[in-house]
Length: 348
Image (tube, rainbow, N blue to C red; front, side):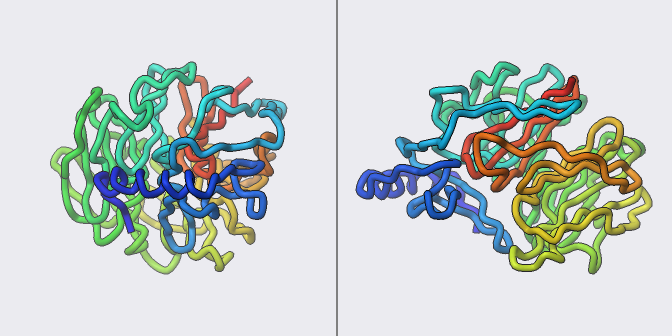
């Protein structure tokens, strides 16, 4: 069930009271000592998609006691660090899920109630204390910026929503045409430049959205799709989606590759079900897929590359979701289990 913005506002007082009464202090790794996950702490607002828990709200004043200070992990090409929050800053409130960015290096973390904005130095420009959002009424955990069109887009329930790409923007319905539960959304590339792709987790379909004129139609569906969520486009027009399936079904965890013709095939699978929700594709077509221990990487032909390391300030990824590359090919990843937390893989 998705909560409307008004429901979030009403729930803040109830949730804050629960924490005040119980005196909740979260243990190492941003979670409870028993589970290591914020989503298992009583009073935290959670959404559920096929058994995949997404943090929606952490009451202000909730204390997090890290086991040790954040440190950097490195590989031959990338160094991992915590981009946000900065030392001494909190991460409570409406929790971030999706992520998008602009050409100037600003990041836009997404919560169901609005888009925030951070500059390249991790300073919050819009959305501090869950007020003065860059854009509101997106009604989705995911979104994408289309700078040439000066628009922001999101998929919500059976609709595609859009807003002007400017501060204090408000989303409105652009078009219907999805079936049940719009989730991830991505800009088309290659022959699909100037259009969108969106996943429908409820109907297990992928839709193509042309913008001039606005037409929404099924691009791919069938038995290979099991609750598709995150979506990303390769430079040649190939589309990739993550099946999150059921948390109890390892076969539900897979990346599906969709050729420009619409033909779908299994690109990668995983026996482990944890932390498999983040997906990204860089300018060379390399596919990045999160896991509990780091980020798996693949060439466009499916050849497995060396993985990127996982976080060192907590026991691996718990619920990575949104991601974005900046112009320098640095990769940013939302850790939803940290509520408002972004990791950065710096390219060298």
